[in-house]
Length: 155
Image 1 (cartoon, rainbow, N blue to C red):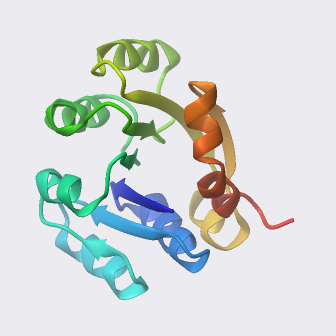
Image 2: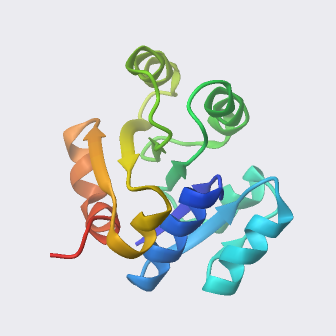
């Protein structure tokens, strides 16, 4: 599958690398150039802006936000929401407070799916796999299954 990863800190970068190892194509964005260079060496396509990220992915887009819970997620969404279209899936992987998740899901444009994925596993998850606590519309979650399976511990 093809997806975007926004936020390439320790976990976001390790998740990106794991997804690439498992055969997925990842478009990556972070404000830190060094973080983008790291995942580019692993095979991700680094882009310079969210607008470029949008055009690098075919519709419908899967966009994973791996930013710390709170204001960082809201800031990314403020810039990202004008760029998404019906059918796109936004994933918040930052272990957000459930009330924030409900507020954000209500704010996405009609037809855009908002999925909340709590991620546990730390930097070791890149090698061992991550525990994922997934919530969102059934059809969107089913569509994302190959991504979740790639991130989960190997059976």
